[in-house]
Figure 1 (cartoon, one colour):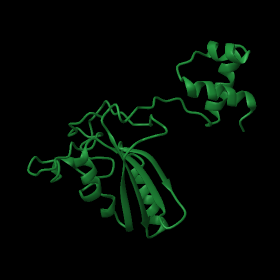
Figure 2 (tube, rainbow, N blue to C red):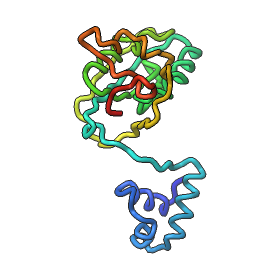
Figure 3 (cartoon, rainbow, N blue to C red):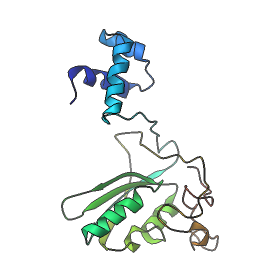
Figure 4 (cartoon, rainbow, N blue to C red):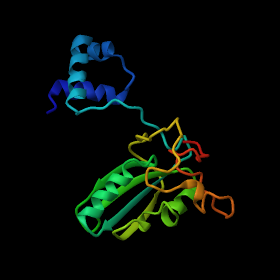
Length: 192
């Protein structure tokens, strides 16, 4: 439950996540110790997570929304488990309605968008997918910063989804559309 005090603390930190606890306390008329206790409780309760968000526009990234329908609950659970570790995924959820899942992903360039739609990484190729639609986000209005996973160590041979980028036809420089590979693998040659 969010008390009025917790809401005030969160509101200030959402405006400026680097605001010192002393400054938060000063603005609210309480001690920085009180602010720290409340913040730590919210973290311990799993209500708040402190992280750095990234502006995809400043990195030249495109955002893609993929919605789809998976035939069985078992396939849906397997799909969610598989996709949750993809470094391009910034939002993943199940849904009620005509489609039963939604994924928001980032793409480094139009070629990656095309590969997400048609290539080895294509969600349409996964078991149990009945139908899916992919939408390119034109302008990110709110929020302007997203929870992008930056991966500084690239030591994996195989991507989290099971694709071996080194053997993928889109990774090889033989066509017009060359994939930079998965950002989690040693094959990656992109900005993430």
